[in-house]
Image 1: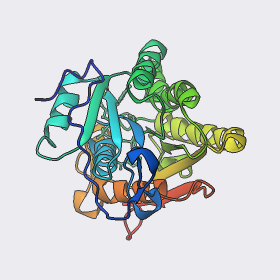
Image 2: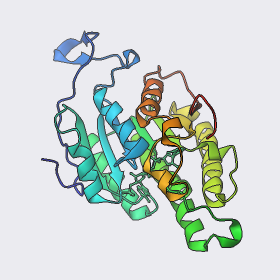
Image 3: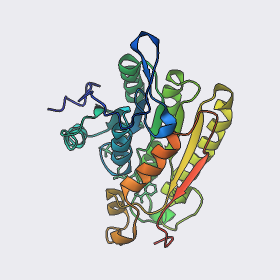
Length: 273
Ligand SMILES: NC(=O)c1ccc[n+]([C@@H]2O[C@H](COP(=O)([O-])OP(=O)(O)OC[C@H]3O[C@@H](n4cnc5c(N)ncnc54)[C@H](OP(=O)(O)O)[C@@H]3O)[C@@H](O)[C@H]2O)c1
């Protein structure tokens, strides 16, 4: 049974080791090289991990042996997300957290500190869009909600996570093609993602001396629930799958610590929908 997502408990902790390339050290320790795609012993937080791209990344990380904590606002959704993988030997835990709330973000990373001691990967993925509306029709509350989630939430999580990170750690900020390309009727979303890109690029420079790498993830259309918020009838068959985005992200996390992949752009081979 999954534990309550209010408690950062380990759901199942028996990560599968998927290759034989294990070096045995003194005192019975083992070292599993991450460059071969195996992340055993690593720790990760995925915000917005209850569904969509976040859940895809969380599952791919956990399948690579990583201990993963997912966060989101809805306890039942977190529980259901973990329950989906109950027959797999994965280390997945959950904690309820609204990334736009500074107190909840601090509680999340305090729980991560207590449970994991340190953090290798932070995936800032939690995000929201708004219904299509030109500026004169978009309410201030809607504009603020999207900025608070996508931009302020990313800032708050980075700020709380950095003290847990060290050389070799990676922060992945899930942005969007909307960080580079503008779409009429999406001013709040465009502004949040372009702002988050500027934030990401600044943070990368600030953390270089600590050896912490910062990557901008720039997806095009990915088949998730977010489309219900602004284009419910969008052609799903043309979109990239969450699993393929997750595979690309996890591949970058297996790069050696002296290599930084600053940005990944991934989307349908056919281009914008
Ligand atoms: N799908 C695409 O085509 C696409 C393309 C480019 C970029 N993106 C970006 O990818 C990220 C994930 O989107 P998705 O498509 O996977 O959307 P999704 O299926 O709607 O999932 C969004 C996730 O974020 C969580 N979330 C939303 N607001 C939150 C908050 N304030 N605090 C904590 N968690 C919150 C949701 O859980 P709760 O609602 O339970 O909190 C859910 O787990 C977003 O940043 C989005 O902008 C998506």
